[in-house]
Image 1 (cartoon, helix red, strand yellow):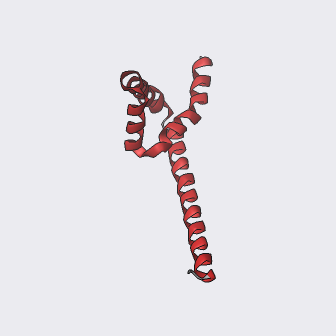
Image 2: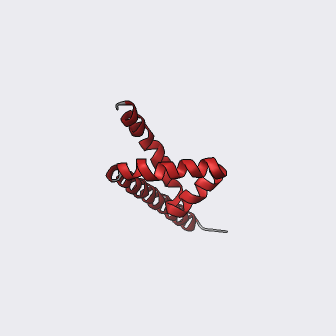
Image 3: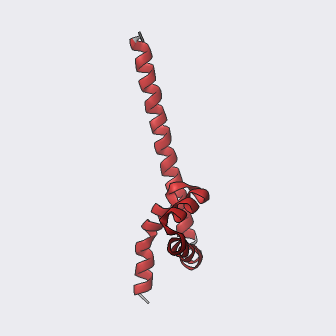
Length: 93
């Protein structure tokens, strides 16, 4: 039977792991948002058409596989965040 001290230590280690992964998620998200902010023209002219073509040719699974290879699941949410800016830029012309 495990002692109370071991249980408390295991809980503390789990909390530390959760905090670490939360920090990593925030850093990774900020990384993609910075890329989007600094490369808006590249994103609009290259990345979005490629994602659209992949989606039309091979379905959403291919787009997800491609985004995982480029940098994890965080690319598509970052594009979704940027979608409003793209639409505003298009409709303001």
